[in-house]
Length: 248
Ligand code: NAP
Image (cartoon, rainbow, N blue to C red):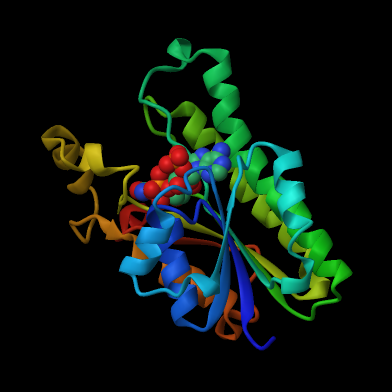
């Protein structure tokens, strides 16, 4: 099989789906792991992506056993790229208003889900004796800054950077590179309601030097670059893709 394989969690929507489109356009086959698989066939057909290039698996990334049973089906694909994109953003509220279960759910999905998929991917990478590979963790600008009302999201996105930097060192000698992308405000289903809100536009978009939200394809292009041989000496890095937000 001469096509490379990329595994993309959260590949059914937003940034994850844009990664599916980009990697397919670069001659990969893709494995999508997502909660929300209904409607993906239609999206693929609308994007002119042949269903034979995409393996779709429904799973909750916060459930290690579910993920493990999917990874057990994948070794023959010899995947060289993993993009940990599945994530949630709980509603805005001060810390004392979080209930404990809501906090744990966000940690389970945004942080533990990336750990589980990375662990399973790395084991398979080693077992398959692959010569090069790449893991991309999707963090956020909130992985570098605190934001009022977003304690758990920000905490998980900071934690993803710790995961990235340590994993990068665990696997550097095997040429398995691990990097994080920090998207700014990107137009996806996750942000569609904020982006329609005038107060949010005033508060947030005015702080972005490029004065616009980003597109999911702009994150996907960066993910593809990081997985490519053009980024062969790049590991343990955080790449902001945020219209200059963190430069201010
Ligand atoms: P999105 O359109 O909501 O896509 C996220 C996908 O992940 C959805 O298909 C979602 O399914 C899936 N998902 C959520 N929880 C899951 C779970 N437990 N198991 C499996 N799949 C799950 O959001 P997005 O904006 O593309 O976000 C993708 C990533 O980028 C997230 O990690 C997010 O934190 C990060 N990010 C986004 C922005 C932004 O501005 N959009 C900025 C910085 C970082 P459901 O629809 O069923 O929940």
